[in-house]
Image (cartoon, rainbow, N blue to C red; front, side):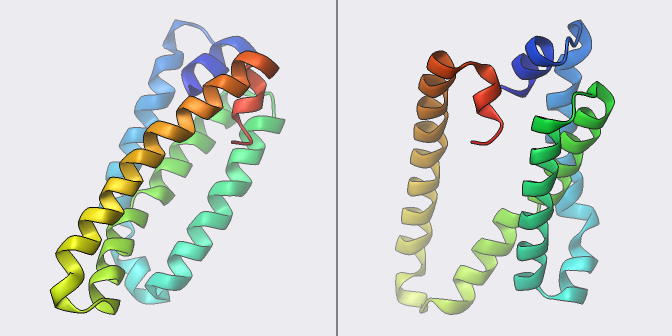
Length: 138
C-alpha cells in the first residue's frame, strides 16, 4: 500500500516501487545489523524503543509531504521492525515450558498470519470508504 500512497498522495513517479524494496531491505538489514545493539540495551528495551520510533516515523510519513523523507522513513521502519519477530520468538522460547513450546509457536504463527490477512482487508475497506490517506494511521 505504501507504493499506492506515495503515487497518489505524494505525486511519486514510476520509481515509487523502490520504496517498498527499501522497506524489505530494511527488514533484512535490521535482523543482521541490530544484533549487537539488541544485546547491549536488552531485548525488551529494544522492542519498546523500536516500536516507539516506528510509530513516530509512520506519523511523519503521514504528515510530511516530502517524497525523500517518506522513503527514508519507510526504510528505517523496515530496519527497526526487522529484529522484532526473532526477538519475540526467542523470548517466547524463554518464558514457556518446553512441552508446550511447539504448539505455542504454531499458534502464535497462525494468529500472526491471520492478522496479516485480516488487518489489510479491514484497512482496504476503510481506504475505499475514506480514501488512501486513511491507511497511514492503520
